[in-house]
Image 1 (cartoon, helix red, strand yellow):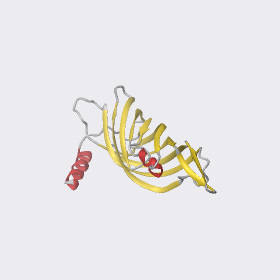
Image 2 (cartoon, rainbow, N blue to C red):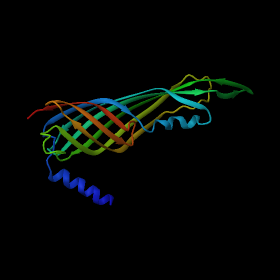
Image 3 (cartoon, one colour):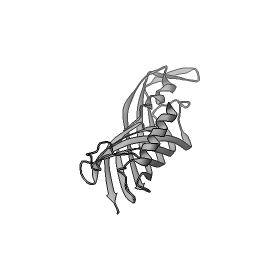
Image 4 (cartoon, one colour):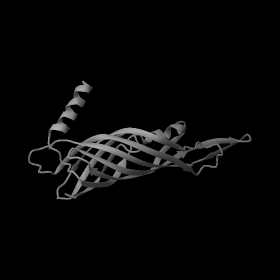
Amino acid sequence: MKKLFLSCLIFLSVTAYSQNHFNQWVISGGATYSLFRGIHKLPFSEFENDFKFTVGGQLNADWGLLRRFSIGIGMSYHRHHLNIYNYEYTIDGQTFTENPVQSIFTTSYNMRVLIHMRKVYENTDGQVDLYWGGLQQFIYIRNVSSSKDPNFYQLQHNFDALPGVVGGVRYYPTKNLGLHFEMAFPGPYTIAAGLAFRIKNN
């Protein structure tokens, strides 16, 4: 079933009309959200905890290599501030209790290839761009905590290369300015929404 579905997508993208254009640039950016941010809570599962603040953003630039294909680069940045309550640790037989904040910073860079699908509706006249594809990500994660525990859990990791899949839709109510919604997995963000600006050079 999965092979049939994939074959249908490829067939539609190759044989049908596309909203992408050769030599067209699309600059898109906006806010992001990770459905998997809760993974940062796991090292502190025995303590009460919650997110104090979460923010994420992305910026992508895609260039129309062909009418149905584009290549692009992008980056995203995320901050997660995790409150941990009644955290206990022991030093030289003495127990301390505190309420530290664990701040996680995630920066990613990506390269991607997108396949642009057919017209979603016959009367959209180039207003809707539906796409899907793959991306290669390079992710750096670090954290800073307010804890005084010398053995407090610290997360710092580099992903040399993490492949993923991405799909989304762009809607252009005007000639050049539009809205976009995107989903990606795996990676630092799962959902993104914002503005898209297209520049046609031909």
